[in-house]
Image (cartoon, rainbow over all chains, first blue to last red; front, side, top):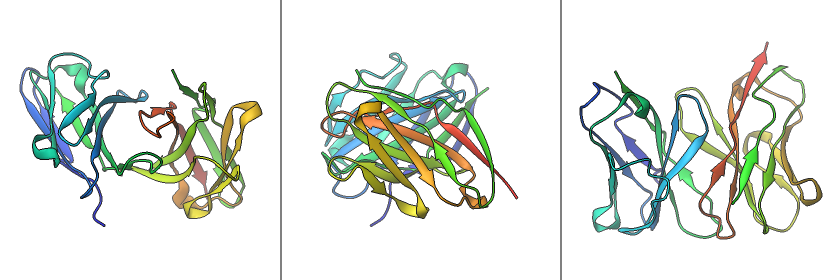
Length: 113
Length: 113
């Protein structure tokens, strides 16, 4: 099966600009997650979709971040406006459900200058 | 809430030597435990997982991990390290649905020729 696909792989934007990250989960995986690792710190949970519904968005840092998953397929994570502290690697993962663990994508490295 | 500690930030071993990476977790119920590896420029790859049953779990690339409930540990081992094992290793604990991961801070492994 194809893996979790994320793009772009790298993005460099200026502070104040908008960036949209995309994640295509494995086909048939209802669960989709966003995580990020900023400044070499721990990988932190952002949010969890079940199909098109937000199951848990407790990890979203502030209202500059907006995640969507229209139709329950791919997901986007928009950062608007981007700040310097948003720099890091954003990972997407998908899962079939309980007990299967996650399959992660290769991540999007975001650099805000 | 669950938490994960990886006491070693950076470990250096010689190629062919044995390896043990430590992981301790805190979780009130039976944990779902995972080890992931991130090679330079790559995403997070699942090495192995523990849900129940045999406490010694075999994974890919010759890795294994042992769940010790009494010590709240899930240490990763490999009998003979290869240069290609140089990467960052993350231990993670999921809740009783195998979801909502919490990652440890990671251990960076360097391998000397």
